Amino acid sequence: IKHNVETLIKRCKETGIDVAAVVKLVCGDPIIINEIANSPITTIADSRLENFEKITDINIPKMMLRIPMLSQIDKLVDLTDISLNSEIETIRKISDVASSNGKVHQVILMIDLGDLREGIIDDDVLDRTVAEIIHLKGVNLLGIGANLCCFGGVIPNEENMLKLVRIKHHIEN
Ligand SMILES: *Cc1c(COP(=O)(O)O)cnc(C)c1O
Image (tube, rainbow, N blue to C red; front, side, top):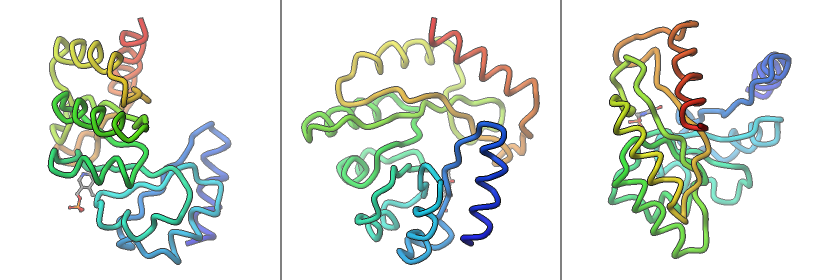
């Protein structure tokens, strides 16, 4: 695993890509995740808060991949630094919990590019969501994301990646 991580990171660095290692397959195994965290990887990602509970003493930014449930927000804010989100109701609650704990949680806003697994579909909803997030005290809009090669099997290509870039410019404007 260590060798693979190092090889992958080296190749990604050459093209300016930062890598988040998805570790859900090892179910929070601290020995393996510690090896990965000691590589030049920037973030550890998992879909389950139960797995993050096993690695609280590994000091590296942690990202929750699965859209968090409203009932899990206290734990989410406690155990992770970044999460993928597409619902303003959830993001509001993350902000409330984070600010009452003196934290700022990082949010990556998901946008649907046709895969239909997760993400905002409607342009107006996107605008309204962004307009609200930037005023919330307990969250920071870290970036936007998209889910591909999953439910609908949509493959990343120049066209859908450019759509994401256009949305990025639109949000920045
Ligand atoms: C893995 C994954 C899930 C499913 O999580 P499980 O813990 O496997 O049930 C959901 N969303 C995303 C983005 C994932 O990567």
